[in-house]
Image (cartoon, rainbow, N blue to C red; front, side, top):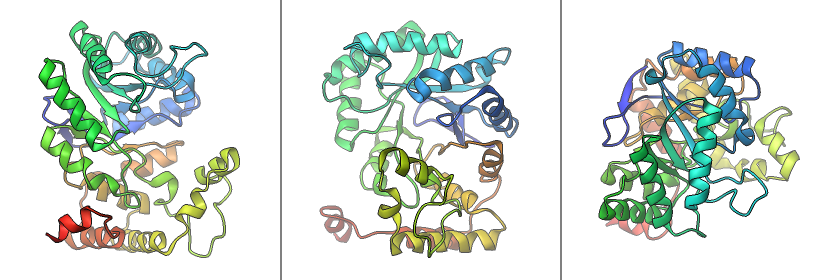
Length: 328
């Protein structure tokens, strides 16, 4: 697996990042981690709120006895981890408490990439950024990053950090895939301009780009992530995605998969790996079989024609003012 620089930093990470949100136990989680690292993967992402710390604990047990400096470990802060008034958000109090708890669960003395999980409108950004800078200066964090922010929020954060002499965000973790390309409107070009690495999450759109879904279906198949969330919270993911635009994208992915002898997941991931400005898509396998399939996205390339066809099939009309600016 190739290694890439994370934005303008000197940090090198593998071209796929392994997300651990779906880890449920040591057996499956450790098998997936073994397969990922044996394939050359070095970049692993988690968060304190994944299974209320359980994901970090599984990763921490796996890390024991391994050479820590061979790996880049990323985690996140923001989610509510208790019932107290300061058990969530991006206050200095919560950030400092949360990093200490993550370090204990991970069984390590430092976190390579510590990311704010969501913008916190209730906390001044100065407070969050200065707290992250303290962690970098203390050696507990190597690089700060962020996720789920607007372009204006990212610009403001990086500008403020640089003005104050604080460590600026090194990475952005946005939602981005063949079915969700809004990140291209502002966040991708802005990240390139700022020197911020981009590590997209949900690269297979919750299973929609894996081949599980076919034209003519009336609901999400049992056992799929879409069916789970629909039953659990009433999420209307199926209704939102069951459109001709979606099926058009899936047809194109299926066609390229047949041409290349690859799975649809591998084609969709490969398209994202090759997108300008992307550092490393975050795969999130629940099983070893899914992990092995996802890892087949590296070691080959789409032809220019195949990439163009996937891009064209997933293009959508731009809203104002992006449409006007594109015309001009």
